[in-house]
Image (cartoon, rainbow, N blue to C red):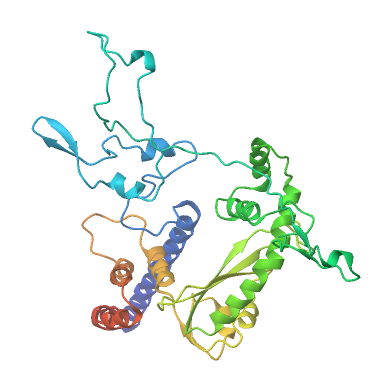
Length: 388
């Protein structure tokens, strides 16, 4: 009888272990399916897929007929604009061109007695936002040469030339404004060079994408690289550095297939009341030695995710990232649960992270000393509750 009870207990434990194993495998499958097919957004305040923008229906999604440009109020049967409107705030720094509308000469006579009309006054009618397209012009520098009329007849004539500004690139039409516009359109607005080529053509000049590429590379080497080196030196002197790396695809890279992963490493300073320094460092791999080399000499706090490559860093204080921790809680939340079901541990963990982020957002306008004091007051109890 004793052997029979032990055997039954063994079977019950085996069943329980198998049930746990099935549950774990089901959760793993759910996470894999979520990572492959579900939205990658981690936001919880809005419904998934609600209000997503596309190339073709952004205007339809963003349109709202209830939004009026000026602020209006009803005053005894008619509408009056408020003295200080949102439009006034938007337009306060934009230059104004006033167009005075008048009658032509032959219409400036009374329709009753044909007497010449006098101006009674003017009335504001409307305002429009006028767009002035870009235009090109050639700036031609002409140097003035001076000579001494007295010394010109001697053995030592005196000649002086007026100073001229140095060229951005020798023997080139490139100017600071043209090159900066090419860089801005490509790296801020994401406009490829072949599309910029068409824009320049519409402005009246055939500027090839090869020429623009040469401008970008040459000016980056001559003017931006020394600036980046200086900022790199200053970044290493700061107390806090954030770091992350992301995959980029590089085409036609020497000795690498186009499908091979390359990485852009991002380094930035913390919010310490000093001007922010943000630097990008391209590397062909994700080896942690790249971070070791870039941060050589840094002694402060290093903030990153849990990537094992950062374990190679030394002589600094490592700080974990709550946003990445929250992501693990998001992944562990079941895809479907009943509306009245109690919160899972993953949802509780996510909510603690949200509380920390909400507090941090409320402190963003404080100084670093004030923020430190408020963190001890507001965030420390939340952290203690989290660890409990």
